[in-house]
Length: 527
Ligand SMILES: *[C@@H]1O[C@H](CO)[C@@H](O)[C@H](O)[C@H]1NC(C)=O
Ligand SMILES: *[C@@H]1O[C@H](CO)[C@@H](O)[C@H](O)[C@H]1NC(C)=O
Ligand SMILES: *[C@@H]1O[C@H](CO)[C@@H](O)[C@H](O)[C@H]1NC(C)=O
Ligand SMILES: [Zn+2]
Image (cartoon, rainbow, N blue to C red):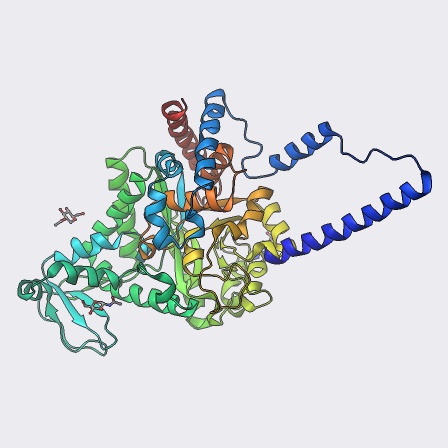
């Protein structure tokens, strides 16, 4: 976006110069001054036309919605005048500021539709993992040499393994301990990126990614215990439902799960469990629409392993058509292996005449011209259904056009982008760690053009985030600025059903269900 704005600025200045020159020539040449002031009615019409292009710009608001919109605008003006301005502050410090905001309180009550980009290992807050899961019987812990921890549930002391020589029963350890509360806090620190001084803790993107991969390993010992997984998924849905979210598309590697006696369940068990938990949850919460899974594999795998994973995903989609939405590659994009590197694997479905929808992470970077940057166009060439992040999209006019024409929505995850610290201000990596100001997020361009877009949270537990209200706040107040209005929110929420992987009849049913919630939201808040 930086380049675009600068480019725009230059052209503008050049144009202005030419115009002035022309004016001067006219004045010199013809004597009588011409009236150069723009026609006010034309100005109004242009302003309206431009606003109508933004997300929600063409949404017709009802009388009650117009009323709420006016109130919302007042709240937002007060929000924009705040110092510090929360979207300009790192989320770990902005969170308590956001919680004091009237806009945020309204966003919490708003029916937000679905969450389409969340990774399974970060679905549930770390509080619950430590305070509930690690307090269950038969939980063993070991302390690794790099000052991290590992967990495993077992009905006898686990054998030493390469990263863990000595396992201790947590129950016994806590009983010997003077201060279990601060111990529990240190365990939480192992599971999240949240810290009081993020700028010092993450001097570069590399450090953030390393901590991220570590937290993932720590959590997996807890989450992949079969009975825990059930409760974990249920709890995850509760956290979303509490934030007025009615649908989830979860990215998951379908980890193998284990029992106390060491027995291991396969991926099909994971899918079946996910399906059962969802059914139970919907039974308990009839206003919840459902869930689906996007199967992921790590891009560190070889091409032949990814080929096998693609074939497996095709089979699982055939066996669980209601649950499996499609396929994605995860792991840091700049680690070298881009989509093109995996082309032989990703072309398999097309070659075999089979179907496997893709939901690729692409362009989670602002480094133009790199392999990661090319992922955007490749994702579209491989017929991706949506683009995860698409941070780099505004730099790619052709890809942007294709994505718009084919209705390939971008999954915008503002807080994740800020935490992973893209140098949004255009400074070299490592120089300025505070990306920081979300007003500079390139998605502002997409929002003002009405590009297909949904809001999501990516790795909520890592950021101390829950639900979608915080990310909606950042997109609405920070990225969207003063011109984003109630229509914007309405379209963003509806988009999350419209661009979901649901089959058309369920999409219609989902939109209807969401509309009812929306109408109720308007009638209870629109005065
Ligand atoms: C832990 O979570 C389970 C399931 O979510 C719940 O039934 C149980 O009461 C919780 N236990 C504690 C100690 O919070
Ligand atoms: C992880 O937990 C251990 C055990 O309490 C603690 O010593 C260590 O400092 C924690 N690591 C982090 C990164 O917080
Ligand atoms: C993408 O879609 C086009 C048009 O339907 C099709 O010809 C092509 O084979 C697809 N490519 C892949 C990789 O699936
Ligand atoms: Zn992601």
